[in-house]
Image (tube, rainbow, N blue to C red):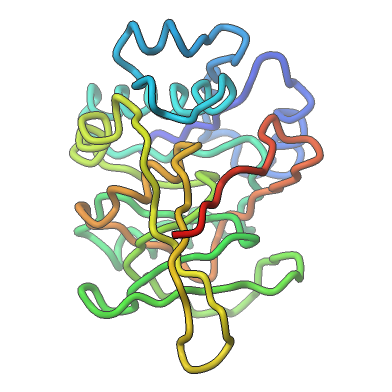
Length: 250
């Protein structure tokens, strides 16, 4: 399997940090040049059929989406699964072994998330087709644990495309059903009480590729690795994204 890390040429500091943190794995990882937001305009993307006018994507979000799109095109063209990473991710010490276990346990996967942002709810079904569960993580910095057992629930929604494996069929499906990028939202559960399952649903507005993926995950065989074997830096102070305007109450 080919493994790609998306990295901006204009941010060599991020790639240097990735290389330092993940040094044992670099011989099997290829750097994939990210689309730069300075080379993107929404109007040009509209004209090219990449995004619709009603989509609330700024140039940064479009650049990120186009980076993943180009890798999905590559996956489709080579006809084999690939792994996609972003350059702030930290891989577990036994990452290749852990990933192989995840792949072997879920041979029918289309999309397998190996990491995600823990400052955002994760929606899963512990048995495919069963009721969804919403996982809220505490504020402690996530860390890798030794001697742990994994589970791989069905994934319904997640934030942060830091590390995932995708098949050619899923890549093709995403290309056909996410693009052109459009408006819309994922109905995320918002708890009004910690007990009695008292919740409402709020609109997680489609302002980034992780939302767009979450909006179509119900139509593919998607799983998530718990606990994660890839942890994103998710440092908003150094990110090209700004968190804001993601949620609208229903």
